[in-house]
Image (cartoon, rainbow, N blue to C red):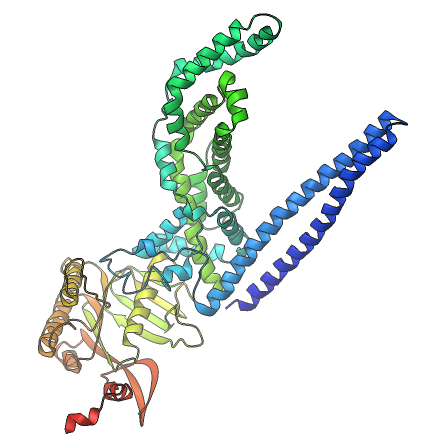
Length: 599
């Protein structure tokens, strides 16, 4: 881990902030002295020499402007450094607690009946998404969630791995991208709205008569104003009446056009800055160069196009300024000219907006995974194979368990048509082990590093049935909800899709006999259709299936050691069937009088 790295980084940034604040206190004093000096010296020297008084005042006012600029630049740097301190403090906290509060936890991406996300805690509080996510825009959050919601193909996985490895050590570059977005709070913006805006024709599109009118009339306004001062005011009054009529008949469309872009200038500036940072780098990996190529254009660079739109929108937002309305809008059609310029921009570049935001999303998603790789250099990038089915893991652990407490396991499965029955007592680690496999497979097939020393896995879709809840809204019991989930799993099996099934204590909502009968039948069906899966259970009788279906069913277990009433767990998976159970001891600890069973 990089605890020392982040601690030193935070300290360095804090020292820089102190130096800048010290410099700004000095600049504040100099600014004050320059302003007072310019005023006082001008009046002291003026009686003796006007040129000298003006010269001295000009020098001091120039000094004042210079130090105002220096002060302003330092203030921007202080804000940047304070945001970088916050970013690095978050990394430090995340390494210690596996919990990040600075970015979205992805709760909005939870999908009911998703094949695995709920059971594997992919989204929401204390989730895998929250551990990984360092995205500052909605595009980035959307892209990262898509990476973690479905497996990519092998070529894409290989490309992402190379890109993540390249980005991993570019910590200054990655954190600069983050601080730009955090200062603007980009994740609250909706880029989809701007994408749709880019595809939708403007209310003024094709209105050549209006464009001609507002292009000619301003040239008549200035002579009319001059003539009003020396002659008749009739021409300027006529022009004002025409202007008022034009504004009246276009008022609604102006409002519609402005509302579609209002207050998005800052967002566009930040997007432009992120793309500028990306386009300025000489990337080595295929994936990053592919993104860069998508952003390339024949005329001007993508970030310049976005920045130009941002400036136009910023100018348009000034339409509510009374001075603009009276001085520029009434006779010179300020807002209409801007709207036609924005329409011209949209006609030329509007179709590219979706690609820009998608590119930013991929940049951020890859950067987030690169941050994960940097924070955990002991993790590995797995080999992903087409052959179905292989799983080989060495020292694999659950990413959300702290290193000091994490117990890692070696594990291997060869299929297809292979089911491992995992037995063990309560709290021995069965469910965590299934989640360890599931989470690492999902990470592997997203292109991310995995929490293991080595890993090889086939490209599969993970399907789980582990954490079943009843639904009052749908009038659905937990047993029926589980049956529906198992049906979802069997749909994959019957279609012979490449899937890895992780089933924890299936059919728990029925009696023991039916549970055993149904579980045995399900396992046999999985074997029949060449499925691959792990089934965690307390039902030891299922272990006989290893003898009934040799080469297709194998037993694994988690053991415990009991010393009096003390329990010791090693959380290590072993071959065979569990022989030791702890339920009576646990129940006795909770106050249940077990001796009453015999009397």
